[in-house]
Amino acid sequence: MIQWALIVIFILFLVLAYIIVQGTRAALAWRDAAASGDTKVIRDIVEDSLEGWRSQKRPKPVAAEVWRGVQSLQFVHVEADFVRVSATADSDYKLVDGQWLEMRNSLQEGIAITAQCAEMLFYEMPHYRPDRLQIDVYTAFRDESGASLRECILSTEATREVARTVDWDEWT
Image 1 (cartoon, one colour):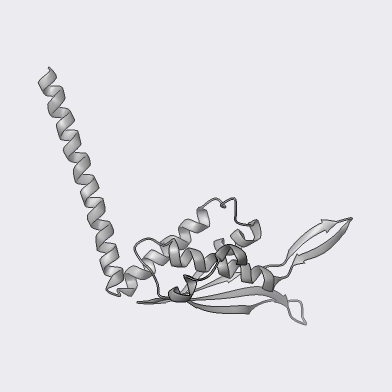
Image 2 (cartoon, rainbow, N blue to C red; image 1 turned 180 degrees about the vertical axis):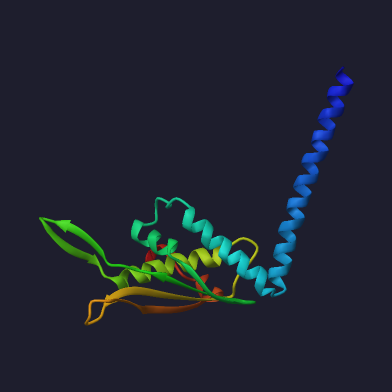
């Protein structure tokens, strides 16, 4: 009876080892494809990361308004070493003594959102490390007829080399 139990445990160990090896091989294949400049694979990696951030709970050190901007990220364009995304930013208002006060305008929120998104895109995407980023931040305005328009209020290009020297917490 003990022999059969040992055989079953050994077989389970082999199956588990096989699963781990296959997962490692798949991760290496994604990493190699991204490193070789396969834009379809890079696009999938970026879109999967954006989708993961949309469904992820807000980290405690990140302001709620900034996290809403991160969750609004949309894929725009990708090249072998470049990613372009867009986000939305809205002003932050608080009710003080019965009056709504603008605490931070859309541009200030956009700067904080851009810094958080750049940090995440440079350092938190699996299997791919872009050398350059472009983050476009949009906000809503009303035209004369009252219709809502989306306008770009901030467009930021960043390189990994410069990003290494940035104190990201200072900007968010």
